[in-house]
Length: 441
Image: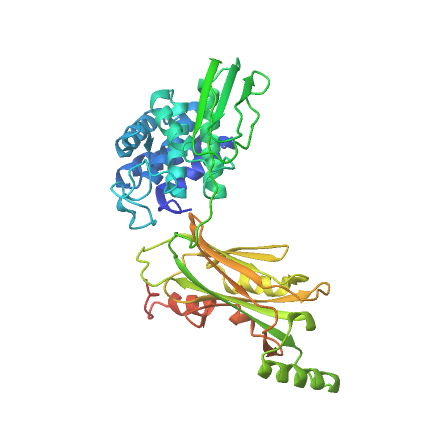
């Protein structure tokens, strides 16, 4: 969670939603409503938290008939925090000015710059839309729903998984409240270009909820004419290539790989170690020639990035084909990095680490991968780091399979997660004593 939603009134609002939907006791729900409503005055300038609070309180009023006055007050506060755009739409963001969430301020974001929205803006606007739909304020809901519709990507989603879930739920709620099922529309598409013919796509009561996608060809102008009754959304997607990614980089990323051999006095290991050591000097160690490869991924906030907090960070570490992360090494990361590595997911050729608030100090995770099957001419493994709520600010790098370093013997488990060169759990233990200084900001 971001935008201060991971604590205080924001977290309480999420819990209130879960308790109401889960049918918890009236007493627990009432306590949560009281806390959220009484804390609203302390939420200054954070539209994201106000949006989720308004959503939770409105849902409680609708489902269990509690907190209705608080819900109305929350929606009024939310209304006052909305950004009115020149095209008649309305949206909400995070902390005003973006100092805490990497948001663009309202001055920087005019609302008409489609594609410049952030995940936090999409989520906040989605929660606001649901709240206004449930309250019956369809006029305001239309403004925010239209803002969301104008910012869906070519696949119908937004920037991240979570904002897509919230955005689609908001649009679904709005559609259910405003649209009927009687459709009889003919959409005539007329592309302007040599050899391009016009065509008609029909939207009926049987197909109104079916996505229809067509390639209009190489045209510079398109004319759509709609006849009949009903409502439909037409979206034009244009694909093109750029020489350089225009997105800013929020994090630095370095990934290295080492061949691992056992530290044994048995003779059969000496020849292999000697051979690998010679290969290291020559820079010719191949991942395909070893059974275990150690992967270390280090990231930190990029120079010049001044946000106090980017929230959750996704570190996606790619693996060589034929290798899989060992269970023991990932368990060590979960143990040593508890509180920093919030979650560790292993998938085919990828391990994803959910890191809590990476700073300007280098944060590193180290784990072993074991060969499952042999593959010749291995290609580089690609890794990515990005802010969970700002996936457009991604840094990508790779590690080659033909220039591995060398590690002999076992690795100290405490080195599985380090911050600034120190084991992550050692830092927590030091800071836990009252006579020591707090961690750097």
